[in-house]
Amino acid sequence: MLKIETFNNSRGGNAFFKAVTHPLAARAATSLLHRLRAGKVAIYDIDGQAEALAELYDLRSLDLAGCFVQDIAAIGKPLLGQPAQPVTALKESAAQIVFVVAFEADRPISHIRHLLPPGAEVVSLDALRLPEAIVPAGRRYLDPLNFATNFVFFREARGVSTRLVTTNYWSGYGAGNLSFFAMLFDESGQVIAEWTEPVPSGNAAFTIDSRAVRERFKLPEFTGQLFIHAIGAVVHDVVKYALDIDGVEDGKRVFSCTHDANSWPADFYAGLPAPDAGESVTLWVQNSQPCEIPAGAIALNLMGDDETAALDRSVAPFATVALDVAKLLPNAHWPQQIEIAAGKYMVRPRYEVATKTHGRIAHVNVERTDLKPDAKLPEIGNLFGKGFLLPAPILPRAQWKSLALPTPMGRSQEELPVALIIYDPAGKEIARHRCGKLARRDSVSLEIDTILPPDALKDGGHMELVYDFADGGSGDGWLHALFRYENRASGHKAETSFGAHIFNTVLTYKGEPQSYSGRAPGLSTRLFLRLGRGDHDTLCHLIYPTSMPWHASSATDLILCDGAGGEIARERLAIAGSGSRFWRYHDVFDSATRKKAGETPYIIIRDLSCRLFGYHGVLGNDGAFSLDHMFGF
Image 1 (cartoon, helix red, strand yellow):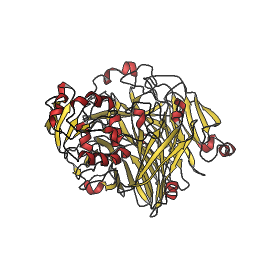
Image 2: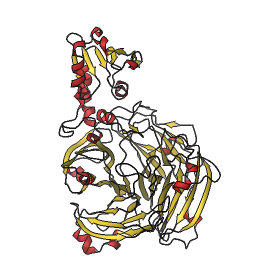
Image 3: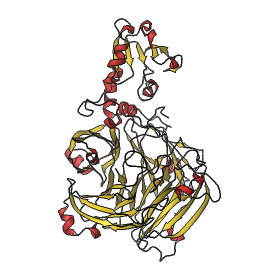
Image 4: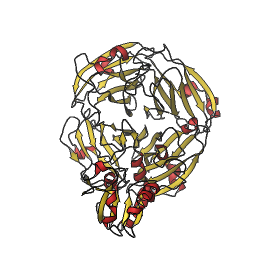
């Protein structure tokens, strides 16, 4: 496991980590290490980052003349296998090279020039700085907004294509000229394309299509990952996107959508489903680090079982490996779920479920290592009502099956006291299924067909997974579930997963209700809905979840925009509190309006009165469909 900090839940993302693992920084690190190997090296670790840097690059093999620190509290502590010395002892080190482990190092270097050994060369992490075309001058280098990046599962192979869709949401926060720098890695981790392209202003749509990339750069087929860096970002330091996967592979219909990968690698992930009968499950192991993943560093285990099975091969920097779950866990079967020991080597990974006729792709989630059971959760119901809740669609039951699988997402979570509440579109509770205190190893599939009679919710509704402390137990607020849907006629399935939040109350608790930007509470909605191409219709299921009673109904605008971000049409929806609305693009906007919107339209879902939660998908012409939760900004 890499001993680095990528993300801290109280401080956010670690910009130092992003700066030193950026693929362009990794490229420059080859030259830096070559310089450092030219003589005896003194390490000057100003900010305590040398150990983390050594996890990524081979500093321990250098001919070290000593390791030096500025903070007297660090003197004598181990540093790269040596006791740290005060920087005032640097002159006696006989170092030929002094490596200052810091960016923007001119000032700290000026402070120690009188301490340098005679003739010593000074180098710093500024050797890894990105070009000014990517990180412009004028802002602190390690400002997180300089590193608004993400990785994308990207494939153009064996009849299957991928398409990233987003919008210039930074423009709405005052961003000026925005562009995307992109690097495409093939399966071996080699860069096969690299480019920068401008993003139109004014909330314009932005698309990267694997077919267009392959044609533009005259590439062979590829399965790998796309690294993207938003240049000129403001407010948001994460690149959010929707990703559509579409094609036919060896007669198998592959049709899915997923979303951004979260750009900070984690120690553990969970929510990987074991294969059902007739299925295979492939975990896409995509190394997002500039160092090799050693053999044995990636491992799987059944939830609640300490016995692990490890991947017995290494994975090159930025490379992709398809891991058949059954090869490591041959006896795992649905609805069992699997934990992934990822060692901070990869961002939120994708998995692919395949049968002989269909394929779908979804993602696992971060399993928190910092959470402990929260004794206050059972006590705050008088102020927060249902408190943390996780909403998901029940799609129109004549066409689709719907189910939920609660998934433990905290390493210390040994029990899961939950209930499933079912609401009709008007917000009326029509059923409540109490699960009791589920043990960590329990995997209970909650199928709506076994809870409701056949004639209930023909036009759909929604479900909410909530804590249920009636029989005792504890929770940590990180309540998750996998939601799976099946087309009754075609057999095609889609699945998505997410975590609970507190919704629509002005009172706050531990940063909830979350806000898109700024402090809690978040009590408004701005969701992005990408639209299917050609004659593919788009479905959207909007849910108005309420932890406590809020406004009786929403005032929700569906704003149809053309590719440049210009408004074409607007429709108003009123969704009842604790209710939902299932709708289709082609039903809400007529063909003339859709034609006016052009070839790359999208919809912004805006509501100033409440916080909505949304799911979106595309309807294929052959019974295939996709479904995932939406992103907001």
